Image 1 (tube, rainbow, N blue to C red):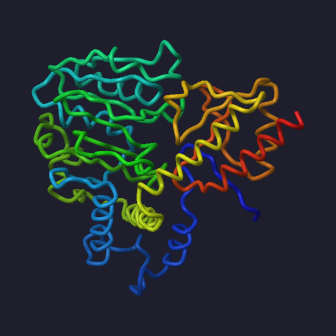
Image 2: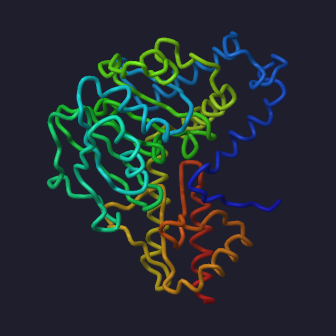
Image 3: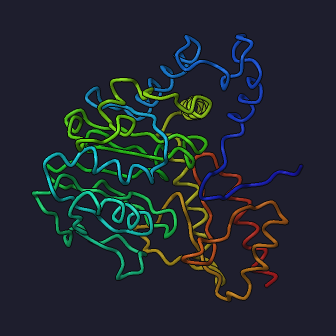
Length: 359
């Protein structure tokens, strides 16, 4: 099979080295004679995998000791509901920043649990820009402030961490975790589905500060309770063991690349090349405000939408997969997460230039 580049927004491509190692270890993990997916989650072999997984993520993100690290199931979508159910405490309100489709889903899911205050919204710009911080309306009586640092569909990304004073800041980092350095101590809670930058679908990481535990609503099932999951090291039920293993391999790959700082530089370079190619073109445009452009998800529109099908067909033929934009916004979208090599972006830019020349 010829080389392909997968620009899917998620589940996304994984590092080739990770897939090769998983293939090598599929039938026999480190001489045990077992596949990881056959191991008891309570056995010494898997417990060593789990410990390395926790230790590596703590190291890569410099997670302080007063934060619990959970590996759960249900995706970020489940956390949209579990976050208010776990950390509202005796508060009745929570603030949300609406910057696109995933923010809107989080808002809708939180409404049955609390009075949701939309403190700022990018709707007026059709979610092509992040609202100015000066215009945010933060209620000091709220339990927390929630935002989505990167919106995969609309392609907007926060370049700085919002300052919300003493309120806990909650962030859905599903699409940009490990892509840039962040100061975890500025957050009350970070959560992320793994299937974009960390591994396969089926694992959701929750990083929660200790003081936010013990506030769960009465009657919340133990399996959804952060404090009880933390006490059992995310093993109240049998975890997604093989997916944990694969996430662990990705973390080891990140370390081998030089850590998050090194990947951030590569991601900056990849995004710069793609955005420059779009800017210099008369066929392609990007609708997002320059200051708010995502490094992870780059939407672009062809000047003649009648060429969309021809573009996608030609891209598929040349090995550039999953470039069709989300159905809600149309156009094209190239998702260039950590595992996308710089050579993949360079090849896409060359293809785009050739398509423009011939059309």
